[in-house]
Figure 1 (cartoon, one colour):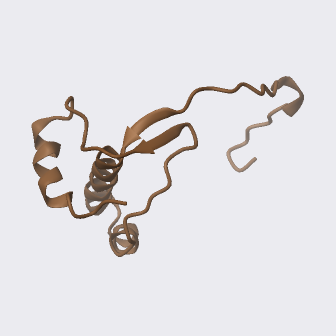
Figure 2: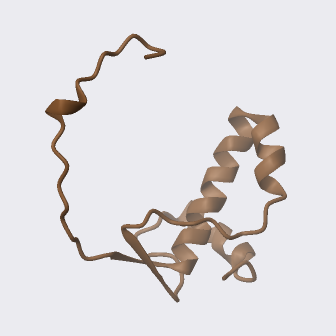
Length: 91
């Protein structure tokens, strides 16, 4: 209600659908976390100071299943260069 929205929860249907989990490599998850930290460092230094000190153990959304591996091949070269720094930061 903070923004003035007035939702009618009765109009929202709950669906119990089982979906297959999407595999994501631990390297990709690590890279995504580093990308987030890079962006946060530029936008919100106070939040960055908090997350910078956190150990790398972000929990992915429940739709993902973490598997061992490096970042995805489709990642741009800019972020791939960062991956070399991150190889030691794995689960």
